[in-house]
Image (cartoon, rainbow, N blue to C red):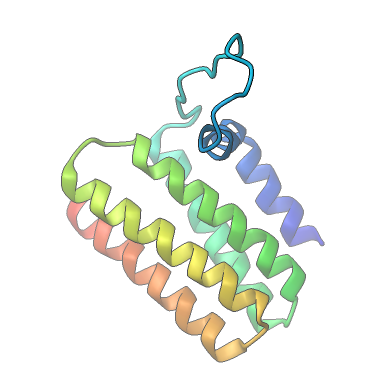
Length: 137
């Protein structure tokens, strides 16, 4: 369980990202207004947190700690959504979309507890991270 809490602590710095989920369903009460989303961390800290989760997911897959891996994979998928708020560059947006989609695929693969598919999905996510860093770092 320690890995999941580490992931939660990292995500806790960007807890506001949960608002992205609620924005998909407009409030039923017209008096309720959502605040504009604004990340609470700069891109460097956000990426460091994502890198930490990535490593912890890898360790959890290797250790067959599937529940921890799944929790962290879904957190990484949510953090990947936050990437969209870091740049308006169309190339960045395209990679952010790809990263988010890849993280959802990773979480679904981990849920199935298929080590090969989970490792393949993790590799795909890592390649998407690298593609972005190759352009923007």
